[in-house]
Length: 36
Image (tube, rainbow, N blue to C red; front, side):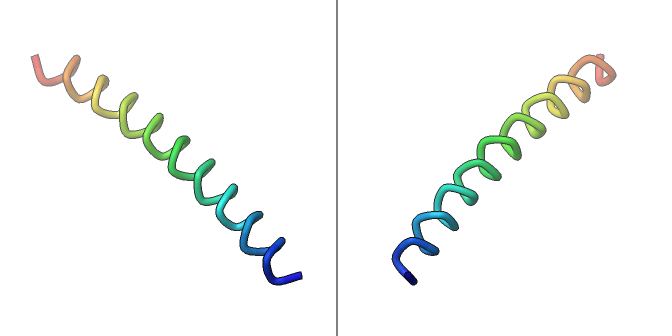
């Protein structure tokens, strides 16, 4: 039971990390464009 929950939480953490990196990359791109 707890092992399954742990695996699911790890999967969710990885998805959040990926989407956070994606948002960070897009935000950085926007800042570069407006910074020039």
